[in-house]
Each structure stands twice: as structure tokens, then as C-alpha cells.
Length: 289
Length: 334
Image (cartoon, chains in turn orange, purple):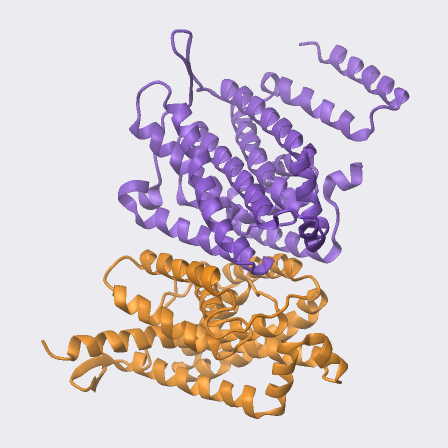
């Protein structure tokens, strides 16, 4: 037996990890920065997929929708932050209830306006690439590359720009950052928009691979949350570690079996992390204000 | 049944008690509702009695959330998971065990299975000392996974079709009674008694020192801990109690309705129970019952085709609860 089966598993693991990383980033930024779990995060993902579907039907090409999804969903996130979420940063548990209400409303509005039917987006990159003797779907290779690009861009944004510096200051200590003259309201707004936009991007990217329907976001809410807590809340790059570990775990137990088992596996890994290392793989313990 | 006599005697009784100053408005409302509940099968059609019986089960479910959310402030976003676990446990026991007394075993399973899951979950979460947010989201994820399991482990759960037909509940005392609870009226009274018993049980628990400890946790966690109480254990206890009651409600549902489907574990069900408690006013127990009955009766007036709109209303209602922070019906009565 040659190296091919191992390479195939490696590629499978990488492609799952890339998807998990893409969906985890938005959650990681919002949760890490504002200490808010956005239960409507899956709906941002779902809206991204719907934008891709609507645009690809209108202009007969996938790529305009792919570019439009993060912008549209990001703007929506901005509006929701301004209207609702801003008012409840002091009471995180209330934001759970609030974002759950938003999540239901978005889902039902989509169901009422676009309809509950299952939709599909045509794969824009059909066919396979020959990677070291293995034929692998081109689109999955594209997702891996895209995840790397997003990773680098976010790394640059967070570690090399003034915005990133202020973000990290707010993550470390909100009150102190505010006292030092950082406009935390502005940071919150931009970060929430960024997180929502990334969820929208992930939805658009995933749209050719999955069935699009109003309830699709819930599973991705679950996955993105687990990625973030495994990687470590408050560490943006923790998402990468979380995504890689969960991707590897899922590749090891392989695709063929029931997808429910992979969710159970994710939950067990999350349970283990919470019990053994509650700050996550890369996280440092923060004092809860 | 002479309703006029009943009504006038109720009036005299309430007047007397108000004069005596011992009763506020709440006990009067409660008494009126109790009397109405007892005479309802004489007035309503069989269909209505059956519906009301179902709402009583929902009220028990609503109570189970209220003992946790209302008193300790811990909110589970996957409470339907425990309801559904109880329902499947009872359904499976009743379907596979035909000997008399299966109902008792089913009830034990319906309580034990969700309780074990709750103990396991809450042990990891509360001893992990992660923030309250984690709890909300993890409960949501667990209920999602439970629903997926119910859908995909077809051999055990029947998949999307669920379990059907489930034999009825049966009160069995060897040599004395073997009474299968079938028919709307007997189910109705059985559930009414269950609801009343569980309500009194919850009220008793909440008036013990344990209940006061739970309330103290909502008031100030840190201070409670500095008084020397084991915070994690108390939270595990209240979460497990809540899961046990939800499971019992689910078990009663399975036996009464005769079928169980994966919808029972779903997030819509969780949303509904949160709304029932919020409408009634959390932390009051009777509010949880009132909310469950009222919201379900209102939902009746919206036809089946308006399900989408109904859940939209539920979502808007949650937003309203958060934005205006009302105290629910019991808040107005008090």
C-alpha cells in the first residue's frame, strides 16, 4: 500500500479543518472581543448562502454572490449590533436570549419571503485536481486555499494594524482599554460587522457543497462554537488550532459513517477541553468581570 | 352540575377571604382556575378535553424550566432535549415491555435518563468553571445532537416517523388495580393530578433551605460561594432536578399521546417553553403553568398553516421580553 490513502485522509482532514476555521473565525472574533455568544451566528451563515444562491441565479455566475455575501451580511450584522446587541454587553446572559430571538426571527422571515424549499448552488469549480497522484475535487482545494488567505488576512489585521491593536486591547481588558481612550463602541461595531461578514463569507463558500434551507445555520452555530471553545476564547488564532484538531479528529473516524457520530465526537472533545483546559488550547485564563 | 350555585359560592368565598385580608388576588385567581379545571371535562368537547390534557403536560414541562431559570437564573437552551429524552425512554419501555407495571419502569426511565445526561453535562460545565454563556450554548448543542440521534438511529427510535403506537399508561397495583389510562377524560384528570402534585412538590422544594440557596445563587454567585456553599454542586442539583421533571413530563406525553417524534427534542420546543415561562413570569411556578396554558390556547386560534408566522411571533416575543423586561402575568397580578 502506497502513501495515497494517508494523503487522501490528510487532504480530507485539511478540507474539513478549512471549513471549520472559516465558520469559526466570525464566532471567535465576536465571542472573544465582546464576550457575547451570538446565537444568530448560524443565521448569518445561512444568509450568506442565500445571498450566493440569489445572486448566482440572477447573474448566472457564482463569484459575484461570493463577493457580495460577506458585505451584505456584514452590514446586516452592523445594523443588528447598533439596534439590539449594543444595549446588553453588560448582561451576557440576556444577549443569549436576545440573539436567540433574532435567530428565530431571521429564520422565519427567510422562510416567509424566500420559502422553505431546499435550494442548491451549482459548483463553480467542478472537476478534480491531480495532487501527487490523487484526484481531489477542485472546489475543496479552493476552500483550503481560501481559508489560508482569510487566516493570513485576519492575522495581519489583528497583529499588524492599529485596529487589531485596539481590538486586542479590548479583549485583554475592556475597562482599561476604554480608560486609555479607545472608542470601544466603535471597536465593538466593527468587530461585530467583521464577525458577521466572515459568517456570511463562510455561508457563501459552503453553498455549493450543501443544501440551502432556512434551518441550515443551527448545525454551523454548533460547530463554530465548539471550534472556538476548543481553540480558546479570546485568541483569534485559537480558531485555527481548534479547526485543525477537530478536522483531524473527524478525518480519523472517516467520512463513511453517520455524520451524527462526528457531532458526538466534537461534543466529547469539547467536554474534554472544558474539563481539562477550560481556557482552550491556546487561551490564557481571563478573569470574568 | 349547578354552575350558578358554584359561581355564587365562589364569589362569597373570595369576598370573605379578601375581607379577611389573608388572601391577595393570586390565590383567588388560582382557585377559580382550579375549579374551572375540575369542571372543564363536563363543559368541553372530547377534542377540547384532549387538547387541555396535552397543555397540562406542557405546563409540567414549563414548571421544570421555571425551577431552574426562574430561581437560579440558569437558562438552558436545550430543555426540550430532556423532555424528548424522557418521552423516548417512556415510549421504548412501554413498547418493548408488555408486563403490567411497565408504566412504573417507564416513568423511572423517563426520569433517570435525562437526569444522568444532565448530571454528566453539568458536572463538566460547572466544575470547568466556564462562564454561564457556555452553559446556554452547550445545552443547545446537546439538544441538537440528541435530535439528530433520534432522527438517524432509526433502528431504535424509528427515525423521522418516531415511535408509534405506544401503549397507554397503566396504573397497576398487584391484586387490586389494573387501570389503563385511556380516553380523554381519565387522561385529563390523571394529568391534572400530576400537574398539581408536581406543582406542590416544586413549591415545597423551593421553600426548603435548598430553594433559598438556589435563589441566593441568582442573587449573587460570588457571595454565596464565600458563605461556604459549593456552587457547582448546587447548580448540578438544580439542573438535574429540572431535567428530571422535564423528562417526567416527556414520559407522560409519550404515554398520553401514544406517539413520539424527533420534533419533541427540537429547538422550537425549547423556544416555546422559554416563552411560556417568560409570559407567565419566571420564578413564580404558578406563572409557568399559567403561561403554558395561555400561550397554547392562543396558539390554537392560529390555524396550522400559520406555523411559520407563529414561530416568528415567538421570536419577536423573545425580543420583546429582553427589550422591555416585563415580569409576566404573575408580575401584574402580584
